[in-house]
Image (cartoon, rainbow, N blue to C red; front, side, top):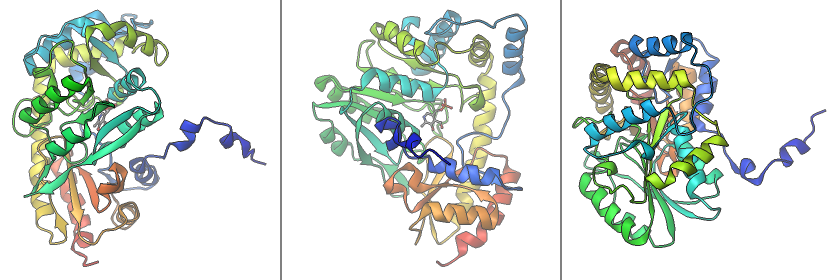
Length: 392
Ligand SMILES: Cc1ncc(COP(=O)(O)O)c(C=O)c1O
């Protein structure tokens, strides 16, 4: 007999957590054959061999031991060089902590900043794992909605500023945003930075899609305008730009005074990130720029094809992304995106993420990841066409 007390005897916080609805579709889809999986946020292509070889060489040379909490110094230096070139800033290694993924960077940041009950503002639709990490730390989350206007996503910056009252602990800004691709302008970032400075509010910038930007080499970043001791934490990742989702490697940029705190928090989480994975990251930053360019070209081709396809359906409201690699599109008449994503999976074998996974405002939407080869996207749209043409 099952001991039902088991689930009663866990922490209140773990009881309160919901399962990810993106995972719900993915887990169903993984049980099926011939599924075109566009549910997760990852490119279809393998990691570049130069990066793989760096990790293999590192393992073979005996790099098997614990690493410094904040990460290997050579990688921290290289992250500074990369960021300083890209964002035109002047980072120094004590401001960098290597993390075992962007997700872990967000989790450590939540643990660092949040005392239970603290008010945190996030943007919706948004990637659910970010609010999940902050909720687990006890944050009281309020959201501001992005809205479609003239075919693009918009934020009401005055409304956001009005929400950032002095008792707010942090605002989390994921730009380019998952799932919409909305990207905050440099001007709006300056407004937010000035306001947050005045009221000592933390800005948590989730920059994991900074390179996956359709209008330039990088999306605007708070790192370009902030001072070294501003209340700013930027979280970044190797996952998206170098096709390294499975490697679990990212980094945090924070004021230098937090170096020891991030070391302590890392000690009680992963303790450190594997040395040979860090060597792979070093190779990505040193030799991976061509790889980023190749990936961006592939992603743009996927975008153009998907945008043309989606724009051709009367039932679909297609809203243009500025960055990341998703189409987050509204389907007229859709009221239960999770049920519909399951129907689409069963009827067509195409795996899409349900809009509700990204917050209540996403309910009539579906998310498609277009970081895929064109032949796969062609097949997916062939299968989706009858559904997207359907009148109800
Ligand atoms: C907005 C956002 N932030 C952070 C992450 C974390 O990426 P990773 O944990 O793979 O580094 C993701 C992954 O999908 C994401 O979409």
